[in-house]
Amino acid sequence: MKLQNIFDKNKEWVQSKLDIDEDYFKNLSKGQSPEILYIGCSDSRVTAEELMGVSPGDAFVHRNIANMVPNTDLSAMSVIDYALTHLKVKHVVVCGHYYCGGVKAAMQSADLGILNPWLRNIRDVYRIHRDELNAIENEDERYNRLVELNVQEQCVNVIKTSQYQKAFADRQVVVHGWVFDIHSGKLIDLKIDFEDKLKDIQEIYRIS
Image (cartoon, rainbow, N blue to C red):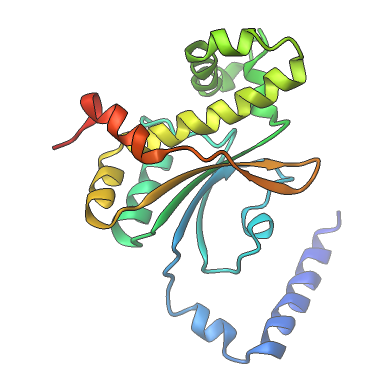
């Protein structure tokens, strides 16, 4: 890839927007009011806005390896705080994808250096759901099921936060768990009952 091509493509993109609306960038610079916080994987094949079909300004995006939401991660917690407390988003989406390299790495017994503490969060997901996962004989199916269960557990991690619980009490913010199927290009809604999850964890994690 020639980096100069990126700047050439940028010029084409700018002009395409101005051809439709000469005030496009002027309006864009006035601020943002997205309705969605999207938490996804850093994988180069999974681009948030493109797969959702949304435009700049429609989604506040946070990406990291394997779409994780560790409550000890300052970056993820800062994003959640800003999105819920200041941007007042209405939806929080945690989106994983099948054939995720981070999830695959977590399934292997290997010393991956600096990645070890990060991947340990995914291994904890495997431990929690070990009986179900070990009962799946096909390795690819087990791998993809762990992708889904990881999304579910990261949704729970969102629900645990004080910022989310306050936002839910204030305006019924909804948490969604999705998976992107790279083979088909389709988004899959895991239909996680977030209200049931909220009730389940509030016995321990309720903030007030």
